Length: 145
Image (tube, rainbow, N blue to C red; front, side, top):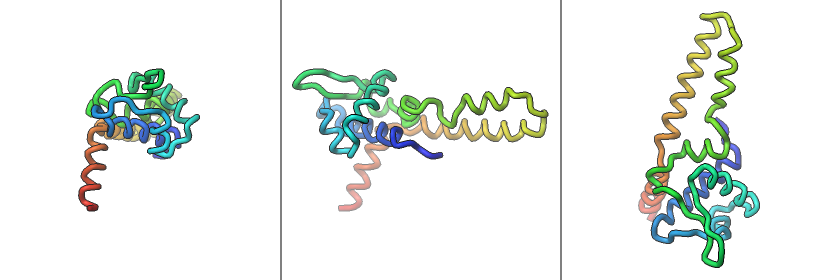
């Protein structure tokens, strides 16, 4: 599964906000961009998509910035990827090829296998929370010291 730069940047942005949760509360846009090495203009677009998906909220003004709308434990990797890329593994593409009326038994087995793959990816992606990702990074830093 190949992830776009947008998907990677979205995950990095949510990770940064999850790492700051709840101690710092709001993270400024410039800080988020710098800490995760995400181009500022691109980050604004990505955060807009994440906001529309109900994952982040923004505050304007001198004390403004971004924060998570839910706890890191309640936000999954799958949600973030879907928010910026759409359905995982092109769910609509799999459905449309299955609906084309191929000869039963021949292509149906392939379609069932692709369906199982889609389900496994979906289960895995939605089973990883950002709380786990932040905890993993804390543990890996502890082991390096």
